[in-house]
Amino acid sequence: MADYAQIKRDLDGIAVEDNPALVRQKSRDFYWYSPILKAELDHVTADLVVSPKNEEEVIRTLKVAYAHGVPVTPRGAGTGNYGQAMPLAGGIVLNLINMNKVKEIHPGRVICEPGIVIAELDRQTKAHSGQELRFHPSTAQTATIGGFVAGGSGGVGSIHWGGLRDLGNILRLRVVTMEAEPRVLDLNAWDLQKVTHAYGTNGIITEVEMPLAPAYDWVDVLVGYDDYMDAVRLADALAHKNGILLKEVAPIAAPIPYDFFPRHKPFIRHRNQSIVVLMVAPHSIEPFLALTQKMKGEVLFRSDTVESMKGIPHAYELGWNHTTLRALKVDPGFTYLQVQYPGPDHVAKVAKMTEIFGDEVPGHLEFIKFDGRMQCSGLPLVRYTTRERLEEIIRIHEENGCPVFNPHRYTLEEGGMKQTDEVQLAFKKETDPKGLLNPGKMIAWDNPDFDFKAGQNYLFPGLQAFSEAGE
View 1: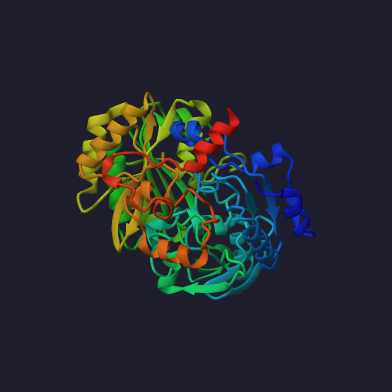
View 2: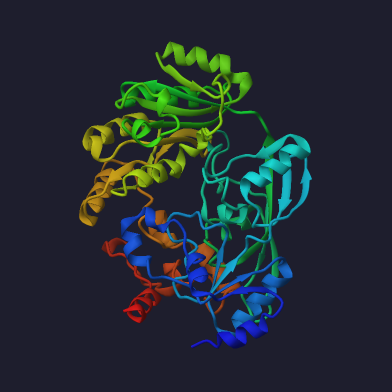
């Protein structure tokens, strides 16, 4: 058992919290979106929260943790959805929210610390030079840039710019290793793949350099259709129009908008109306309206013509996983999936899934650019009944050529890759020889012989120990 009294003495001068209620609070993310993860991870908690205010304090914390053999799990704002920031082996939660400075803003790029909230980062770059991040998660008002880079994959703006894994969408990361003498590494270009979407399993990000794009006063628009597939077809047509500048294109099936978007409900005509949620650049409004009219879409709402936006959320807070969040607030019987519908026949694949599942899996798509081609990913809601039925729904999607990135798993591999990421594993061996960074999230480290084809779920041994200790 680690000597936390001594650890606290060793960390003298750095902000430390050991109040069990506060530590438990900082040991949580949005894992409860999944009823499966809720059952598996509910008891997880750290022993200590350490909140460094600069890179020097991060290095000191990692050095102390290494000396005591204590695990360290980095955390931004805890807005991840599948346990990325939860300390499965206890130990220290490294809370990076106080490292929130913008260091430099240049044409096309910004350098900042990892703990800055994304909306605040955008606010500063807009005020400085009329620029904004290329894309952001729907949780931009609370999520940090470091958490997004370490745990996200794309978001609002991916319709134009693709995802975080696309070369050029992150410019540079500064990372501290977990060794007796921590090293500070600057990674760029191909090397970024070692730590992006690795949940902090192989290095702690202390500085981020991101590309910027021109900022616009985006117009939020809702377009209504009585048939969900008509909404999907409009979204697809708009996404393929190179000259219309869009930041968000999300068709959402009835009855989700009427039932779960209370602030926009007055604009939706009836419960069976599906909508397309859009963000349109002001100079693209006229061509956008022309195409929408041609495709018989009904413009229900525009932020540039509504009397007041007071109390009305941003359009992006209706999309991505905010759709799921809004449903769960009203009806906790829902969960969700993350589905890909590979092109070029993505619309036909969506139609097939809609036909098979109907109201059991109400549709929600996000149109994105993927390797230069337009396609859509799904974040459909699922009316949850049993774990077995959920697995069956996943299997039917995959049998129909729609791969599922499973949000009911907390490991890097099971979520989507279904195999070891050799680059990230090799980097972990180099930067975290004792395996102390965010343990339990990388199967390849704990169990190199794990058989992904056996259909078994991976259960981190540390979770078992936790569970027994809590009984």
